[in-house]
Amino acid sequence: PAPRTVLLTGAAGGLGTLMRGLLPSYGYDLRLLDLQPIEQPAGEPAAAAVITADLADRDALREAVHGVDAVLHLAGISLESTFDKILAANIQGTYNLYEAVREEGVRTGGPAPRVVFASSNHAVGFTPRPQGDDPLIPVDTPRRPDTYYGLSKCFGEDLAQLYADLHGIDTVSVRIGSCFPEPANVRMLSVWMSPADGARLFHAALGAGSSGHTVVYGSSANTRLWWDLGPARALGYAPQDDSEVFAARLVAEQGELDPDNPAHANLGGAFCTDPPIWPY
Ligand code: NAI
Ligand code: 15L
View (cartoon, helix red, strand yellow):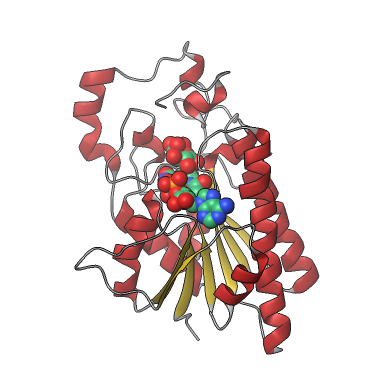
């Protein structure tokens, strides 16, 4: 059966806030969790529960996954940071979440909740971007994290594979490009995922019949796409948007990507410079 009750971690964040607005129309009852308290604005569909908790709190996570069909795991540090902070939130925190999911499966004696993990293009950020007629980047391209942040996403993907193989827990890891209301720069014309397409992809991943661990790229059907959306489409994802509608303005403001600029050379953009150049 399609999942109905979904735990949304990181629900106070940018992507979490967008998904709080969009996913209920697919019929989900959302349980929201974040370190930051969440006050739902008027007009937003009321959540089934709102939990203020840290991913470090294993008891809170156990209670949060109790009775859910699936988890959309967005919580964590979403940009480069110190190794210690990434270790606590993204590595230890994701482990704690998977342990809670595993224990929930043991408790019910049935399948554990399905997980959709917010991975990132920065797991493969040092992969040179395609130019000219180069082929699109496949999901099985070797990992090339561009930051400790990207490294933590590699860990999350490997943890998902381990928990699939050892404990039979199903995960779709979505290597998200840039999911914001609009692309902010010329690089994002290639990697942008509109919020509406993000909801379409998460919905496909939550309901997919796929078993084990599946890795997909997450973006809209962009004219300037860099990677293969085939695995995401195989889950039933049918993107409706294309960043090209923003191209004329962004290119007029910023120019095309410069092959001699190290911040323009790879999938990960300015995350691949030391220190990362902000804003990316
Ligand atoms: P964000 O930084 O706006 O939101 C992250 C949320 O996680 C915050 O509300 C924060 O309070 C919460 N959080 C952090 N540490 C926590 C902890 N220890 N316990 C509980 N909650 C904690 O990030 P955004 O943009 O919403 O991204 C969400 C997820 O998607 C992140 O995992 C990010 O790495 C991933 N992602 C996002 C992309 C995007 O374009 N927005 C691109 C690629 C990946
Ligand atoms: C990410 O992984 C970040 O979480 C997001 O804030 C953007 O920087 C995005 O990647 C990107 O590559 O544009």
